[in-house]
Image 1 (spheres, rainbow, N blue to C red):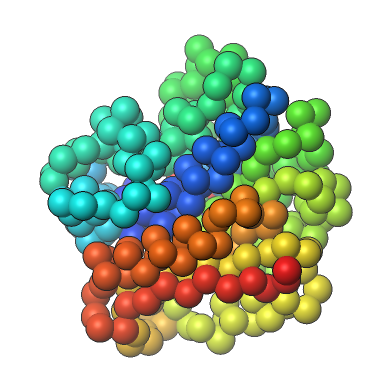
Image 2: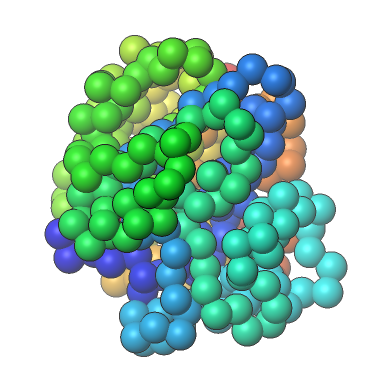
Length: 279
Ligand code: SAM
């Protein structure tokens, strides 16, 4: 495991992923009944943007820093930006960026539950320290794919699963597709948000083709490209597969990702793309 998310925290991919996560969690909060959230690949929780890793790539400067510097952010970003502000990430030169565990935890109410899986010992230790006094959050230093079997369906019977692996291994798309099949067979009613990188579009395209052929019903795909030029050595964009999206999400993401494409563009080919894989 070489992947360290601190190099990428707050980049364009975190922005599109975390903005979508907040919209889905806000939707769950429209009903009083408690929900369960599972983050299968949780990361460390908080990144110091002044740290060596974040400074080395500077990716956050072309991600969250551009959004925070914008005079009129898209309306769908309101809950995400409110969460960031509450967690100490604000202003044109943010000094810290919260990961999915802290963002999800910020949106929870009394009675909601969060389970976090993280395999890297340092990141798992950081998560344990962050949540040590929190009875609503459990940290597991264990495999997130195994949690899709062990923790689903949750007793609440409503909630969300974020699957956000590092895609270090060649088989990660395969593991994710198998994980989605396994999880939705156990718990068909949950909302699943699955992040994937777009470097070589034929690789991510094969993954989407597979989900279109044999994936679960009600599956949406939302992609954000920050550049049109293709260079398989770096991300040209990233996507989310969303199973059982809240009914308002397709329209909101279409508008939001068009806005993000404008604000986060690296070249004129930047664009958003939202489509149903299975309706
Ligand atoms: N979800 C985080 C966020 O949005 O802030 C970022 C997670 S990062 C992309 C992926 C994380 O998965 C890394 O911290 C890595 O150590 C961890 N990881 C890799 N393989 C794993 C596995 N099989 N189970 C759980 N965690 C894993």
